Amino acid sequence: MTSTSTPKALPVDDRAQRPQHPLVTWLRTRATWILLLDIALILIFGLLSRNNVYLSSANAESVLLSMSQILLLALGLAMMLGAGIFDLSLGANLVLSSVVGALVMRSFQTDPGVQSSYHDIPVAMLAGFLACVATGVAFGLVNGLLIAVGNINSLIATLGTLGIGTGIALLVTSGSDVAALPTQLQVWIGLNTVGVFPIPAIVALVVAVLLWVVVRYTRFGLRTQAIGSDRGATERAGIRVRGQLVSLTVLGGGLAGIAGFIDLARFGSTALGGHANDALGAVTAAVIGGTLLEGGRISITGAVWGAGLAVILQTGLVIVGVSSFWQLIVVGGVLLAAVLLDRAAAVRRNRTARRE
Amino acid sequence: MENSDVVIGARHVSKRFGHVHALRDASVTVPAGAVVALVGDNGAGKSTLIKTLLGINKPDAGEVIIGGESVQLSSVRDAQSRGVDAVHQDLALAPELSVVDNMFLGHEDVVGPGFLRRRRMAERADAAVRELGIQLPSLTVPVRELSGGQRQAVAVAKAVMWSRTAVLMDEPTAALGARQSEIIADLMRTVAAKGLGVLVISHDLPRILKVADTVTVLWRGETVLEAPAADLTVPDLVATMVGYRAEEAS
Image (tube, rainbow over all chains, first blue to last red; front, side, top):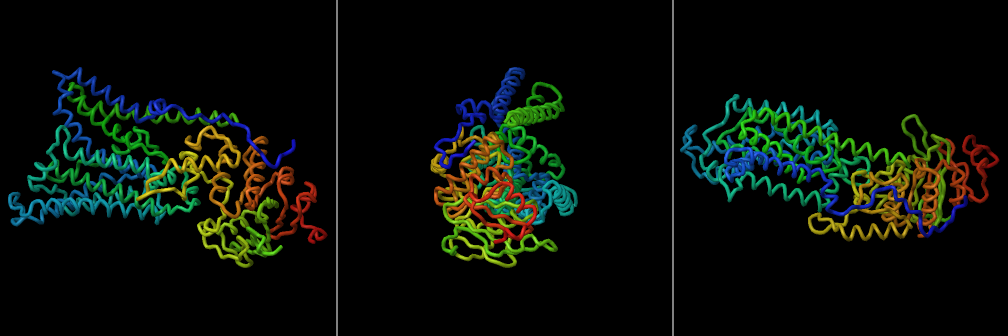
């Protein structure tokens, strides 16, 4: 065999997959299946519910409102997972942010403890909102520094801050919820709607659209997924990986802060005990939707449909009179089925690659 | 050879890691348009020398020459800004990203607050790949779905796209079959024909003797032979690599 020094055309290697029609690609995407599953469930619950009440606009509102917070957490988590960061502390962050926000709003009472004694209510609400977001961002910053600068595994780092954040929230409040927030909070925001869309859901969906653009069309999204795909390769490409990781935890933290404010707006008080499983719910929503737990691939639309799945099942089962405990079982089953299908695809790919 | 003819090289470089004297007196010279092979036994210091030329290691003594000038490199970025890029042993590609995204990682073409100019990126990547005669089924599939030889070709195309002076390759064919190794060897000549310097570490002596213009042999951190490939045979090289013999020092 002699080598020629000026190759004109190298042999075509056709073992790799050729690109497929966009429609085929779309149908093969996990987010699409979950969307179809969501639609099928809505139709089934609609048919089974008395007077098709599941298809009413009131129920649509309730589903959208219920999914707004878990969606915000799932969106932040999808971004972090994209770079290989796992965040267990999102629920604790939400609670701590809501506590700080509630206390800041309470400082606008002229008569401490009296709900009707708020002055400058719009200002109080804005201050409360900013306090929630600032707390969430600070919480995320601490996580980011532990992970990126301290080089602590993200699961361990956020397991630590989960405990610390929850403990601080309980200490500050002595374990009882901060209530008696201005009623306008619920009237104007938490229970207010534009058409069929509750304000909190609009916030979450706007965030989803923005992040979808970021993931698909920006350098930030590209680099985030590059880190999760191969951190060493990304570092050698000259990218400041640590800074990127901290930006991601700050983003996820800020979204948890917004979710904390939504908590206050929906219920008019904090919910100290209501968010212990939120981080796991967010992981479930993100991973069901096709975001890779190992990093490298983010699906924002998948996180939306995944967050929807949990809520649709929860409300649907109640309406058709089946124990809502089944929701846990079904969501768990879908999660496992989705991940198993991923594994099967990876095994197929490896077999093809080994045939070289 | 005068410095001005050297696109990348090292002169009498030494480097210690604690008690390990990884490089004692290592020199290598790559002129423009040439393929230079860097060979040596395991632990001879080949990768350390390449890392020094890339700014990953700082030499304790000696000088690094890029584009005819003696330079002090403080980082990979530094070497990149002088037009030097590398194909690493493990390729340094992100498997989940597409070919185009991988080729532009760290050099993204953006507008405004970081929006990717995907069309321009795709066109440029396509042109770079075509110029090297590489054929891929698609530039939008994730790299994970490519064969080993295709990935290697993508890594070479990426390095060539961003280098203006030299491309360094660390064991580019170690993981490849015979046919794919042949393709990558041809690729080295194509890259050199563009006027870039190519420095390649390889254990595949028969193939490297056919591809390279000159061969530099490292032995325990020392350059013991720099000679035209045409004057060498595989047994010569093996003898020099495993035990430095004084009569070949000149």
